[in-house]
Length: 266
Image 1 (cartoon, rainbow, N blue to C red):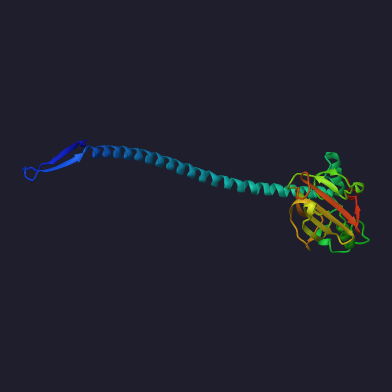
Image 2 (tube, rainbow, N blue to C red):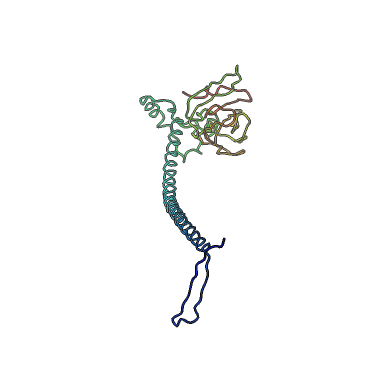
């Protein structure tokens, strides 16, 4: 069976040189299919371009929003840093005045009144005032600075010293990230990971006393460094074998474990 054909004639104006072309109907069918495919492809392409354009616009909006959030976050970090500095300063003042666990305003005011004249001016620290009422000799001041009797953290005692059950220290529960203070001045014997105790700092107070601070999140000192009483040496964490954020704090005297709570003036 022969296929159908169409004859296409091209006739010039002078009717000379008439050209004839025979075209199979199959080519017309192919042409129609091609046009349909081309139209479908154009529609899909336009849809894709629209989708890409919308994504680009959305990405630009996200980029602008992200830049604004980063700027706001920096502002918040600066504000939190200032608040943290104020909080730490308040904690150190409370440690000095002995108001760290007292909520009674009358008792706090009486403690402040008792201590407000006890400050030694910095320009007179190097002078030996032994024998003069109200002044402490330099040797005595150094001796007192080395006694580990400042609370190492603002928190709650969650587990007491109990040598019968081999708990040779005191646990303080506190919020993760809260500062940890050196309970006395001395030299850092070690600062790093200590097995089940996690991140631990050990301080030699150069008078037979050695204090240790365990389960810390962050260590802010290093081995061999001198630290002052009340100085921030790290933050509360739960590294090592810990069931929550807390500080395991211990004191030894000539190698003998002591109850840390016996050093604090509650």
